[in-house]
Length: 490
Image (cartoon, rainbow, N blue to C red; front, side):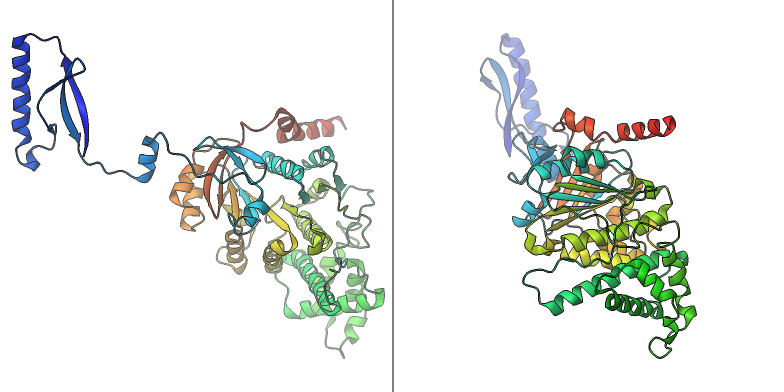
């Protein structure tokens, strides 16, 4: 029991007043001796009236009190969040302790504070996601990391890349000579056996072909077994004829040729390839022609701190065009940086979340990339809106939707901005957040976020540590205003 002194009145009392006070005290003591159920509201007086420090006082004891750990911590002036030691650049201030919050996914992974370097960023519109990503990239570049944005569909990151001395490739601009070949062979690792290298290259090429073909089939339906076999046959033929320099144009031409009818003793029927032929034709002669059908005209500069593939122009051609583009750019980039002996560590940013992962083949390819990220020194960053954007991935209950949910759970680190109550309730039900974490997210303002990783969850305010230079350069609204003004002037 914790004793306290309750001050009754000043000591300047005459005899009659002191007698009245003693009588009142004696009455209180008698009341304290009644049964427990009758004294619930009575004051628990412990000892006689005392004169201390110029005041008449009554020593009392506080009843036992039950409270949660959260309530007691709020009452304890020495309580503070258990923020990890310095692990990278400062990205904000911990809102519970006021301490600087540092974040480098590779350093956290190395220390065992995170189970993998991959990051999921989610939240409602206009809550600061884009600003925070640009800031994280800029700070980590200063710490010797590298970053690649495989599809900057809003054209916002080019200014950041240029300010950091990086490269910007604008895809889809009419008249542009920029080409990307998704079937390029990756660099062979110095300790890799030739047979293993060839098998890895073949698997990578088949995977991206299936992703692209699946996105271009009517209704984005999964490929059937016969179509997969045709793709593999066409790829092998082109590899042999081109000296291991296949292109999507050559694959399409092979599928469209009469050779298909005689291949494997007439095993194929021309109608089996109708959807493949019509879909891939868009990459050669259709609305996506001239970008991915021939050899690459650009190379990824290994010394570029931030490389941005600007797909704003492609985004104007429709969502499907952007999906195919992201599938190609992701494959091209991963083929380029998948040399684990290079010693470089890359942030690989998927700006539009699920845009290129609406088919089962694409989702499975992404799952494989997640598993290999640690081996290749790559930290995948997936950006989604409220609830994970599941409406963009298959129908409810479909294999695609369930695989997408599994993928989200596979992201070891999460940076979550404000989301509405309905979305948070659903996240609690899917065990994405605890109730305490969801409650914290529901109180965040713009520029504030919850960081969840293996070592715990932290509410962080990124506003106090943002510089004026960053606010000017990363101002998404300003970039969009400038673009609109240029469009009107043109």
